Length: 205
Image (cartoon, rainbow, N blue to C red; front, side):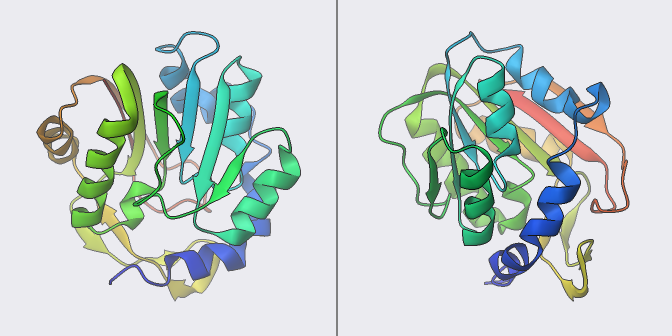
């Protein structure tokens, strides 16, 4: 398994990560989340997959959604539960997680690229099964091609596995599992704490 150190690294950097990203509130910071939300009705059930510190789930709830989150990093989940005590957060592997009921939308922001492609595809296939017909799937990936192991921006002594995707590559994978991309956009590198690639948003149904 090429990505075996990912969770270990996120457990170590959780507090630093939270102090950096849980304060974002400018329109530029929220552009991907807002693009996703415009496809949802108020009161939609939204699963935040790879939820990290819970920021996105908290924002979804603030915008009138019913949010839940899942992540495999115990340190990240602890922060999410601390910051958003009224949102249910589950410590579990997103590759095997299945919610208690079908959901209206799934958000996978900045997480699927840490999976090897086989696991990424298996996760997308599973999402298709618990997303309601016509449901919305939003995902953010690092744009590029192939597998890389950059130094982690928060822990520069450690390399972390990242699988880069082009828009065409991920769109083809989504189509393979029954999704149609309805919107996409690219955001350039904005912060030294980010991985050094453009960010690719795809919204599918």
